[in-house]
Image 1 (spheres, helix red, strand yellow):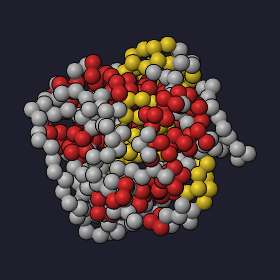
Image 2 (cartoon, rainbow, N blue to C red; image 1 turned 30 degrees about the horizontal axis):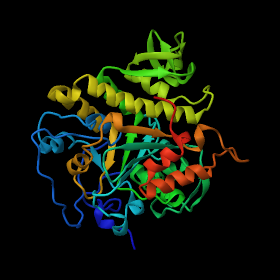
Image 3 (cartoon, helix red, strand yellow; image 1 turned 30 degrees about the vertical axis):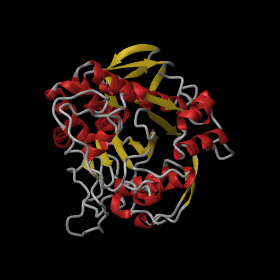
Image 4 (tube, rainbow, N blue to C red; image 1 turned 90 degrees about the horizontal axis):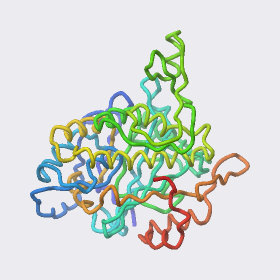
Length: 403
């Protein structure tokens, strides 16, 4: 059965009236909902205290299963500045897979890009690739990170002129973004590549600019992060007591001090938490350690929002959501974002389970690319079949050891 293209906003040709230009790191753009022709779903009755649940990162913090001030209308208003685009293309769920219905399991593709203002919009790879799976019971959530160096068969992509080929999976985003494809094209090709590899189709997707994520963490104040292995930053230096990117620090001509993340648990500011979550060089398991650190950061942000009362304080919540709107691009298909979030109201931050591929160890081939082992492929099949809980019980080695 063909993909139900009416379930998400339709991409417009370059130059067409009303077309949203390709996204670039410094111009996230205003939000806008799709207006596809699929039948509108019946909404649930509004409760007095609407609850938000897990989507990703900043949205996760708004959605950690707590009562917030206001009704579902407040949710729609609060999330209105989060940009929405067609990020899935052909990788959206078909009618046979549930289409735009959220009654069954929900699968989202979460992409983190480390974009900086001096980088071209079409020269960015997605180094954080996470599948968020919520079973049909809507009472649990799972995060599965795909290694950035995983070898993948990247299919052709007409929008960017890419002819297809074998490469590291994080190259799919770059291949889709080039030649005017923008971040929308990058996400679409990544989703198409992952569907080809795993068989999983998606209900929604999110892109988060980790550079913009700093302001989200700053809105929380700090987050508690536990460093398991001391590591020297590969990206930042201290100049006059202030953190700076290496390239910017060198331009000052002043003495530079390395940023070192020492072993132990501590409260980290936004720049420090993000820098630690970016590191892979100098860690025993490289990108596998980085995956766990990024998963830890997501959970830490959710916990901090819960503990600090952010979700029950209208002023703090508004600051957090404004920051999230600058860091996130979202695709919820033809489902309004408030309905999408409200459907998952039974999931809390404590219900978030982090999983790892390849047992968290290297499984490289002769080209120094990761190859997903059979257990990992079986895990993806369990996601598709909505039997992940049973799979995890039978295969506890897939659980991430990082809290």
